[in-house]
Image (tube, rainbow over all chains, first blue to last red; front, side, top):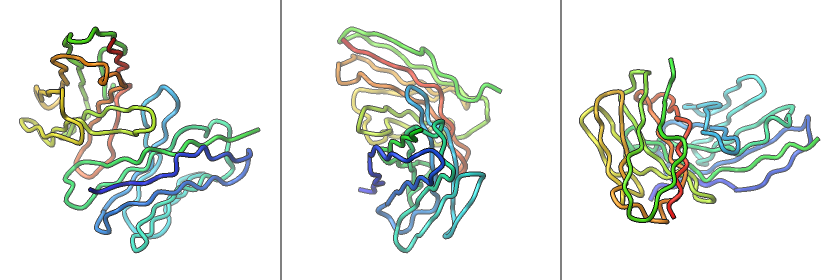
Length: 112
Length: 111
């Protein structure tokens, strides 16, 4: 069974610090990778997606992909209290058609 | 452009009752999905529809049925609700290999 693994946390970081969230996946042939943010009681919203090895930056967010090691990470620079949420990693596995498989999420707490 | 809409927002059922959760999207997406989310379990796929006229089982289909009414609408039916189906249900839609968008969710309590 193809799986996506995340540490459930909570991950606590002080305001202004860099938060590093990690995700590993089981299928080396996976093609696309997504990070979603979910506030308590709300639906997931997309932060970033990445297809190729290396880094992709968007504002304070950087997604890093290493296909050989089968991990994808999300860095949040200058963390703000408003970043406190659960972050979900999702993978489009090879042969999975148009389905995403989600990890269970990492809870991030940014403390004042 | 409303994106993905779901009705109802909240529902309380008694064991054995039936209900249909409605989902609609106005983004002309081909694929639509139903997930349930439980504490500590993440998002689990119940059913999906890759395109109009097709539906397939996901990870946890037992106790549910779906209908892809047209390209816009994808409904989820509970024929005989059980307490184990107490959950938050999310509908989502996606254009092939692009971003998946979620609806606001339906909170279901089965007593």
